[in-house]
Image (cartoon, helix red, strand yellow):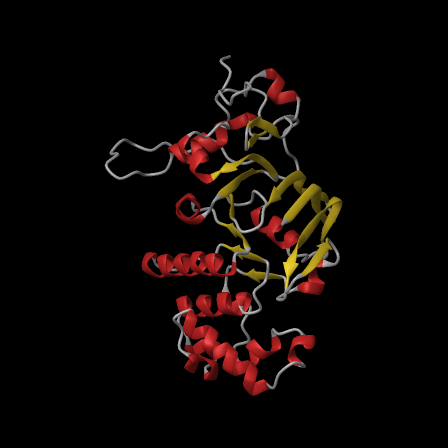
Length: 327
């Protein structure tokens, strides 16, 4: 389980602080695939890095914390911000956007698999026994064990991404974080990657968090999803409910802009552009682009609250039950 409690982060610059995440509060349950969506620059990747405890200057946590907990080999574990990196690979793993930025181009893959295993686990078996387990695991993922002798540059982009996923999940972590796992891959390879991720999640019964600006990715594989805008969570709920009945104006505009089979009507983009994080508007950050915005929206920041069972949103105009108030 992942708990995000009152989380706010910022980047320190010579021109002042740039507040990226703003008072986030939500929980991601065990054995679910959770999606994080939103336009570029809304804070998705920063949130994922914070979940993985990659807090490096100039990024700092201003307040709040993240707690990951679970049970592995009949033992309970719990780590919070500042401690999570102690359990990398073992209980939490990260699948980055670009595999080439993670894999060492001049080191054979077999050594990279061996190096990913915690020291305590290495002592329990020989290198040959470990590699035998790795080879067996690769076969389960429809990957040839022969790639262990290869260098990353000898593999295609899609194959490298599969190897990264295999690396991230080999130790059966309770949490897997995937940042745009299908970016820059063609549609056929994308589908293969998504099928691989869902198959692994069902097999390991872990928590998987997927960041993507592609709403289609979320529709295909996530159970629940959160919609981010300018560093804030504006809507959260079951993926099916969000696509069927989006309750925040921003979410509705995202969903309505999606192409659909048989729908030949012209699609309209969201007018305007997201605000600068260095100088955001006073009230609701979406107000300058929202067709329903009132004076209250421009003055007060809406609270993120439960609108109806399992559905959360941050909007002044939402009545109880989830409808947009007129005027």
